[in-house]
Image (cartoon, rainbow, N blue to C red; front, side):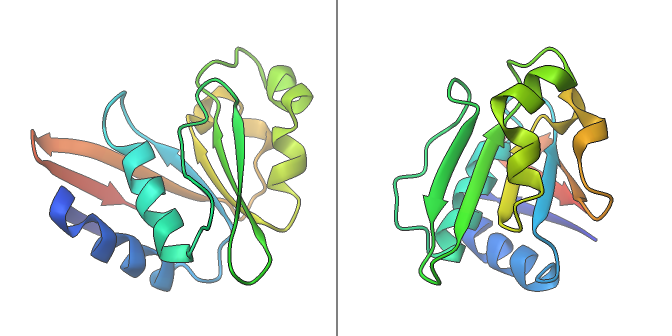
Length: 135
């Protein structure tokens, strides 16, 4: 499926994305720098009802958020990692197999540690204000 959207429609698209993929828990977000991965993940977190402040995990690598049903959402950014071993040492693999929702940016940095049922998502820039999400 693919959807083109502008920033003013991002929350609507995030809700549709979650509804369409309610059977998935690990999401791998691909896209160029500044394509809107973090922004879209922020909208997903809002749609899930995250109660914490959502921030980019570029330096922390893993952020943990709470949702109303008592579960955890992991938001990970693998950009600064060099190897899959780095990802394992950082605890990424533990999160991916925890049974919690995982939203991962730059998954290509450690592709072999993802579970087979991971949903791979691509976000791309079509025009300055228009993004395309594909899964």
